[in-house]
Image (cartoon, rainbow, N blue to C red; front, side, top):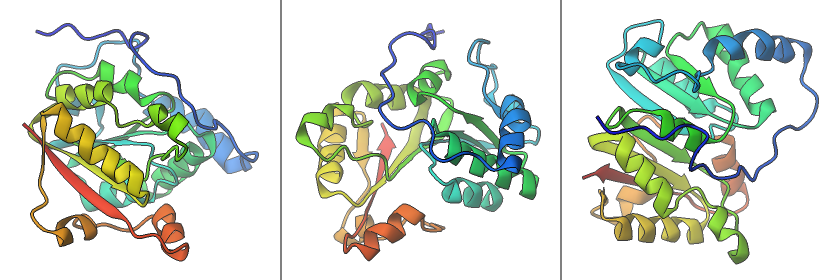
Length: 233
């Protein structure tokens, strides 16, 4: 068995905001009660079967990094009740919004983490995930900040380790430089096959795509999006 790095090792700093406007009373209550119940405990070893993390039987496992308002994660959890979802989001207001919806809908197939996603990636067992979603991540548009982008050689190594052979890495962005950056990094890594065969394959949203507020904002501002799917080889 491959030794798993301790969650406190080999992680990168988180560069985004942690908190915005004050939480509403119900959101604060959800953070106080639901977050401890659903948050992954990275101080304990990951279970031999990750499906044991969930209160309902699951056949597949997916990780969404930076779920923002949670629209996509909630949609997928409702759409696929036999899939276990792990959602990572350090921004307090976004986490509170998601937990409120989880509570309202009674969803049992979601677990969360409210800090650096690299800690979760280092905690997860080898070949344990069917899919990793990185949707509209912070593009860090200034060239001097590109090193902060989540797609990097070290994080692609992490994805490659935790994805099952044939598992998918799905990336969406409306920023051309980040789309090109991701294509180049995945090509150079060598462990991922881009599945597009024609332009419509990356211009068409993923199957069952619900849209997100970030995508809607991009369209209002005249930017189109790219949807990239890579298979772990």
